[in-house]
Length: 157
Image (cartoon, rainbow, N blue to C red):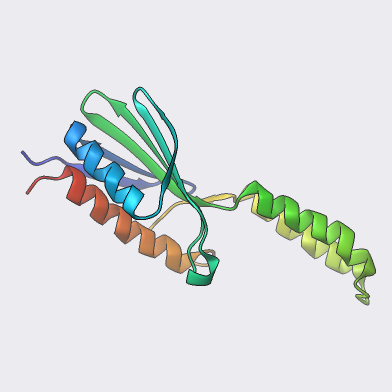
């Protein structure tokens, strides 16, 4: 049996559709756990995992959501900017900027506000192979890693 793997990059989320059974799901789940993912929700036909950031290794936080419909699996994964980071940046900007001694604080406040709005707007990032600019290397690296894990778990040779 050879299962088909279809991966689509939707801008904010990468979606992988694959057919398989309980054994494939268990192999994929265990492979993610070995990659330091943590199960956040597991109920019925749904499994949610997340991985914390390792910024010194250029690795951003990541989430994986697995939904099962019979023998079809809808697997969605993405990098994201945690709300804690965004709130922390805004608080630092509001509390530290007035006392930082910057010559033009209104310009710095405006630039900081733009950065905060962009972080909120573009909070999720897919794992495309041709990623550019923001989180380029981790997105490309995780594209290769997730595709390999999916193929090893679900696609029989």
